[in-house]
Amino acid sequence: MLVIAFMGALSVSLVCLLVDRLMTHERVSTSHSYCACGRALRLYEVIPVLGWIAALGRTRCCGTRIPARYPALELAAGLSWAILSTLPITVVWPLYPQILLLAGLVEFIAVSNPSPRAHGGEQASNRKRPT
Image (tube, rainbow, N blue to C red):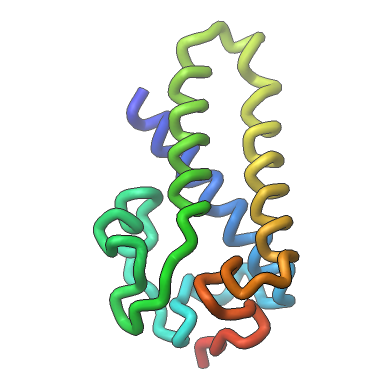
């Protein structure tokens, strides 16, 4: 069940990354996750929920606040997937994509929001891109 919960959190993390990259017209497949200051994130920094907790909600390099919606969505999806894994597969199978779509919608709304709080104090268009 723990593996299924991690898969749910990881899937939602990927959906949020895809939405963010597509909304900022960035390449999805060729660049690593990076901080607002442009530094590439290490693998342990992008572990769903745990990476955010370990960093105390801030990036390690420049201290930019990481929005709490990321671990909240990851945790909700992980718990949902774990709970759904206890039900018969015929009931559950249609619900997994809906959870991912819901997370993508939440991320789309957050990225589309003109509020500077949506991205930890910076607009997505002002972020430095890795070189």
